[in-house]
Amino acid sequence: MEEKKVILDIRNFSVSFEQYEKGFRKTGLPVIRNLDVTIREGEMVAVVGSSGSGKSLLAHGILGILPYNATMGGELVYDGELLTKERQKALRGNEIVLVPQSVAFLDPLMKIGPQIRKGKKDQASREKLNGIFEGYHLKNEVQELYPFELSGGMNRRVLVSTAMMGNPRLVIADEPTPGLHMAMVRRVMSHFRELADQGAGVLLITHDLEQALEVADRVVVFYAGTTVEDADAKDFRSEETLRHPYSKALWRALPQNGFQFIRGTQPYVKDLPEGCPFGPRCEWYTEACKGEISCREVRGGRVRCVRAV
Amino acid sequence: MVLEAKNISFQYGRDTKQILENFSLRMESHERVGIVAPSGFGKTTFCKILSGYEKPDGGEVLLDGKPLSSYGRYCPVQMIWQHPEQVVNPRLRMREVLKQGDEIEEYIVEGLGIEEDWKNRFPAEISGGEMQRFCIARALGRRTRFLLADEISTMLDLITQSQIWSFLIGEVERREIGLLAVSHSMPLLESVCTRIIDLEHL
Ligand SMILES: Nc1ncnc2c1ncn2[C@@H]1O[C@H](COP(=O)(O)OP(=O)(O)O)[C@@H](O)[C@H]1O
Ligand code: SF4
Ligand SMILES: [Mg+2]
Image 1: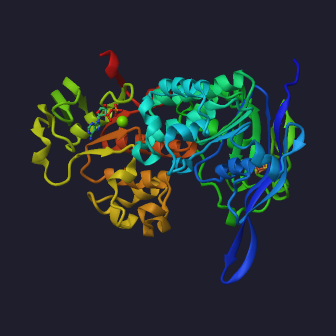
Image 2: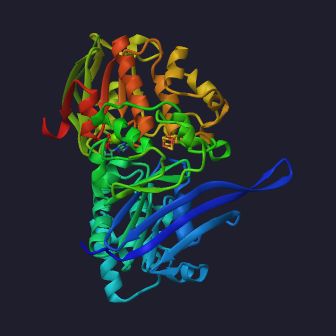
Image 3: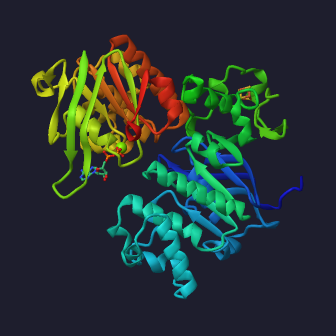
């Protein structure tokens, strides 16, 4: 099989926050560490992690819209070249689009229609938007309204429409469906899938593994700020085909596999254990898990675990 | 005990669509009933009626043959909401929220993984998953006989979801509480319930 072209290569990516504690400046609370993700043309990659674990920061890092007190490390390579601040700015909203988690990303002072069309007034843009709105059960009149005049669910569909408007090469969807009805969730997901099938790369960031498995080609499992496994979506059909103990735990927690769960919670970045972040919950834990754990290739996937085979 | 909805009809206002029409359901406390239907079909509305939050236009809800109102201030039919933040007073600390219902035994709070320092926080200071655990605990008061779980785990990650469900299943079995679970996930209902009702294809 021919290797598809890599659109975005995220290498050893990190985000940390400057912290002030008791009047002293304390730099570097690392919220994301050693994160590697590759997105190819025509591919939909899901990053799955629990809510509040810092997944949005990954999206914001790629687009260059991290908050001012955040520091980014590692490399982002887009289309074979380093993704610099200037390039991020130039590509943002055109080649690279974000479907943000929060509806607060809509401009409150701009009517919906012009906002999504980015000021374009030509007939083709108008017709395209009308078509997209129809698919999402949004009346054309909505284009004449301001975000505050819409319900949460409507604003969310507006946000998704933004991604469908241009011809994006890379779509970053950050928890794009909360509060939407199931049927609408399916529709949104199938539209992302279509974008990928037309050649775009899609990065879906979500807490919902079941949703991810329905549409994504690959699943990257995110735990305590880092990627622990990068697997083909098919690998989630059985426990044996998965590599990392946490991915296996996710598998066992699925309802059809009997709601078996592991004790404990994900550690906060402030009190990460030494060595493997999953260590305290891991039944395979040994001496070797006390050091820095690097990523390895195992059976065609990648895993951050010393004992995975 | 037996919970019965008899010929329930309901609409939210005069000129709005009829949501439930002559709908009946009977379940016993040893049962775990799953409900599936498309969004907007009236699942949440039905739960609200079954737990006394909404009065039906026609028909009645009976618990062991008697109307819910005859059971006093604490309703033995308790509902857990899909969006728990909507039914929690934002000005109360979680510790007080827990005390709003019936007496709750400590092992429930522990079993649901509620941590001591969450109790001192206000609703805005905890995550959706943490909030949902408090609301489940609150619904499991001593006098609860039926529990209505309306899409309670859609917002939760898998491990949290499985912790909550395995606790709930154990608890309703042990106390013989009847469970009505609404969900769009068939695998979930199939592993939780003893019978599943598809409202759309009755
Ligand atoms: N408070 C309300 N006022 C008016 N209409 C409502 C209200 N709550 C729900 N509805 C409408 O009633 C219908 C059924 O809603 P609901 O019971 O929430 O369905 P489900 O839980 O199956 O998704 C929907 O069309 C919804 O828009
Ligand atoms: S590195 Fe060690 S502790 Fe971490 S997941 Fe692997 S076996 Fe478990
Ligand atoms: Mg509902």
